[in-house]
Image (cartoon, rainbow, N blue to C red; front, side, top):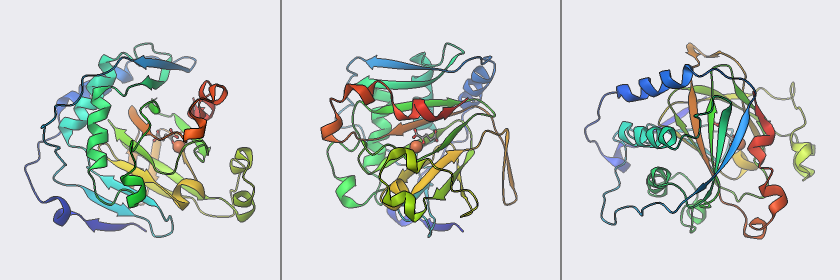
Length: 283
Ligand SMILES: O=C(O)CCC(=O)C(=O)O
Ligand SMILES: [Fe+2]
C-alpha cells in the first residue's frame, strides 16, 4: 500500500545521532500526569526572537517520503525532523507549560509563533515536494496564529474529520514523542457535493476500508488537495494500534498542526473562539 521513495538524492547523507534520552524522560513526565476532564488553553505568544539570519537549516539525513497512491495529496515524510529538532520542539512545548495542568491536552497559539515552532516551519518550508509549488511558495506558508499543539495520552484519539474550510489548502501535522496510526476514509460523492461541514462528518463506515498511516515521531504529514478535502482523518481511541505485523503500544504523543487561515476568515471572531480541533478532540 505504501510507496516509499528514497530521498537521498534530494538531501544527501550526513551523520545521525542516536535517540536522545531526553525524549524518553519527557515522555515519562507526561505519562505520570493523571488525567481528568479535558481542557483546551489558548496562549498569546509574545514575539519570539527571530531566528538567527545565517543559521543553516539542517534537514534530517534520513528522511523517507511515503505516498499512498489512492490518497492523492497525502505526503508523509518520516524522519524529517532531526532528533535535535524534535527535542527543541518538545522542550519548548514543555517549558511553555502548555500541559502543566494535568487537565490540559490542547494549546492554541495566537500571535507570533514561538521560536521553537518557527524553526520546524523553516525546515518544512525548505523541504522539496511536501506541497505543490503554489502552496510551498505562499507567504506565509502557515498562518502565524494558527498552530495547535495536541497532547494525546495513551488511549486518546481524535474523531474523524475534514479540517474546516476556513483554513487554506496545505495542512501539516508534526508528530513527536511516539507513534500512532491515523486512519483515512474517503468521503462519499454525496458528502463531497454537499459543502456543509456537518455533512462531512457523516459516518461512511462500510462503504470503504479505512487506510491506516503510521505517524512516527519526527515525521511530517502534509495534506493537500483531495487528501485535505475529500478524506476524513482520525486517530482511534485505543491503547494499541495494529497495522500489518506492527503493533504499536501507545505512549504519550504530541502533535503540532500548522495551517493558514483564509484571508476573509481572519477577523471572524465567532469561529476563532471555537476552533475546530477543540470541537472534535476525543478524550
Ligand atoms: O494530532 C494529530 O495527529 C492530528 C490533529 C488534527 O487532525 C488536527 O489538528 O486537525
Ligand atoms: Fe485534522
